[in-house]
Image (cartoon, rainbow, N blue to C red; front, side):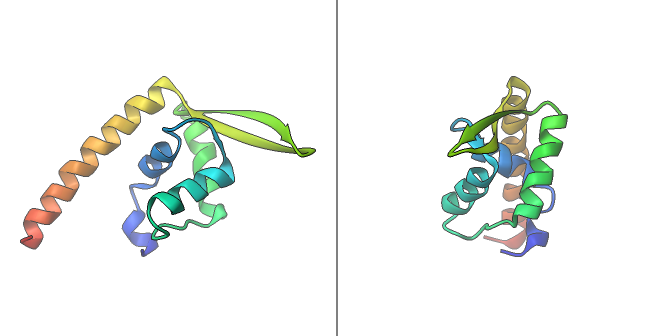
Length: 105
């Protein structure tokens, strides 16, 4: 899938990847890749800055842990993040419906 097609939808995709519970950054990337059958495979240089932005916005909360002697940061949805995810899903449904209607399918 072309990166241009994801513009405006990255936040919703990342929030959805965290809906099942806390994940570290790379696991968020992998969850998104797996849930889309490999069609969305974002570079880490896209995922981590977006996660940091979502954290600053209060939509996700991060915490540090040590696994195998290495520190890693895990993220989870906040209440505001769950609300934002609902809004992202509603917006996506409206958009997808309009595009489907316009494309005649």
